[in-house]
Amino acid sequence: MDLHFDRISKYGTFILIQVASVSKIFVWCEIYQINEQMLHIGTSSLSVKTGGNETRTGKIKKESKEYIMPHRITRLCLRDSGCVDVCPVDCIVPGEPVDQWPWYYIDADACIDCGACEAECPYAAIFPEEDVPDAYEAKGGEVISMPKGTPGYDQVYEGENAMGDEVKLDFTRTLDAGEVIDLTEDIDQNTEFFESGPGYSVLEG
Ligand code: SF4
Ligand code: SF4
Image 1: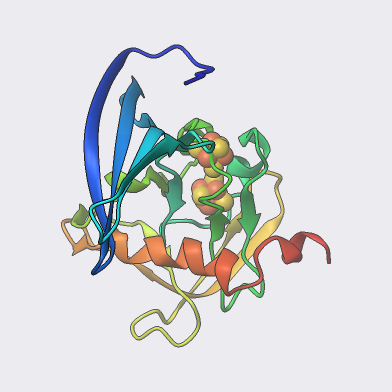
Image 2: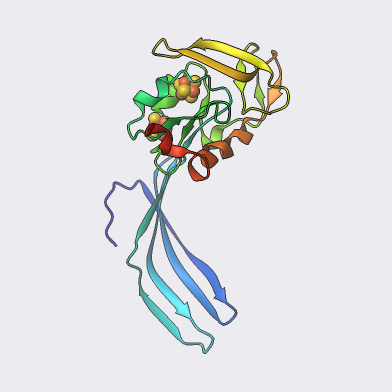
């Protein structure tokens, strides 16, 4: 098995996959821990047991898949835009139309988990997916925005982005100190923006 990265540690296990009632597949998985958030999972051999007790073993050509935890943008985003320029893979896209897609969104398939955007955001709106808080406790005064029609979001926010351009959001509300909200609900909006929403097409207009 040919590997192209420096591995820190290696684990291995057999995984049994029941394909149909008459056949079972045993897959040998090699798991390499590269760092705290990245795993390399590779399959090097495959054993197939058919209904007639016949066993076939062979090599799998597709050897590896890297697993990366993407970052996500939450409703704390006020379209500052500073995160866009620091992203090395250009996977942060401003939502359009703004009343339906009020935040910027991260393409999880392209994000390489570098963390540059998280450090850049003045509103601390970006989190690694596993760290998006399900009980975010407000300091007080944070403005959060949601799509048009979301109950309770009836304030207008006016501010400036990182380039000095005007930002206006029509469906916002201000958090009280100690108020607790679940930001994990916002993870799916990042996915939907690219899978069923406008995605990268907003950059073409
Ligand atoms: S830097 Fe923060 S507030 Fe600005 S667009 Fe990115 S996520 Fe939104
Ligand atoms: S973590 Fe890095 S790659 Fe992912 S969106 Fe942020 S800046 Fe881009």
